[in-house]
Length: 340
Image (cartoon, rainbow, N blue to C red; front, side, top):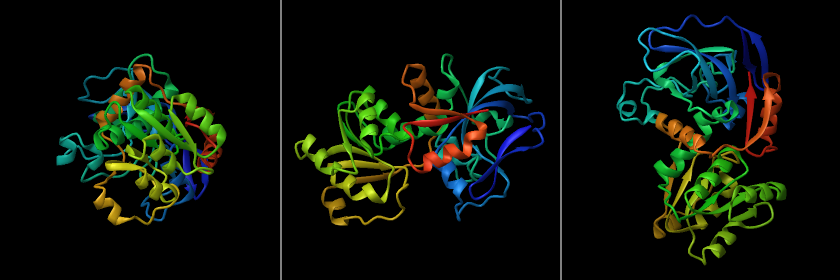
């Protein structure tokens, strides 16, 4: 069967690999339909020193597939049903797993497509407990954005930041995959959204998504706009994933007791922080990585209710490397999905 594999830094190739065996006890076999691209794919593609893995490695961390075979002891699944596989290989036995905090698994084996073989292949076996059913009526390309994109935003906004209706939120890099979803989710619950983007064209498109105020962060100081919009009070929540270039401004944008939730550092992993401001203004900084299985299900339910991801491009498997290059240089608005 065909699989898209990473052989070295920036070296992906479509390879012929042996198909998986029939699914074992507790497993289902999926015919993979589509893969959503994320920055974790970019990091793995260009080489990360901390990644313990063996090459060649099948890529693809976020995907959707169709059940084609069912292993012994599996209940609740049927042939032909679509499924979103969870992107991490968790143990299912530790305290965090039992409590439904899958992304805090104490014995996680790794992330699919980054540490372990991923989903950019024709067939893949997956433990049934690590699959989430796709509700009827959701397009394949949309479902391919559930396992990481929608679930990450769900976990950030609701589990961690505790965003409430009527609050004001600053969404950084709102033209990104998670940024576009954050704007739509926040607006759907009646929040005031201040959003940033790096070009005038992206600002225009973010405004079309429903953002109330949009700032081109290459030309204007978004923290000044945030203070002005809120009459110097500051925003309740900052949705941060850019990192060093926006960090100080994000903190300055917060109200007394405000919450900053962050899941990324694409512009750099280190940034100076005014510690006096943190404790004097009683700010809360919350790290957020990945999501729980229930966040994937909640995201799919929102899709079924009409809240869909913004799809920039749907590309064939052969266009994977080019799509990653576009993602790396921020030449996208929303998500890139690769079909198999």
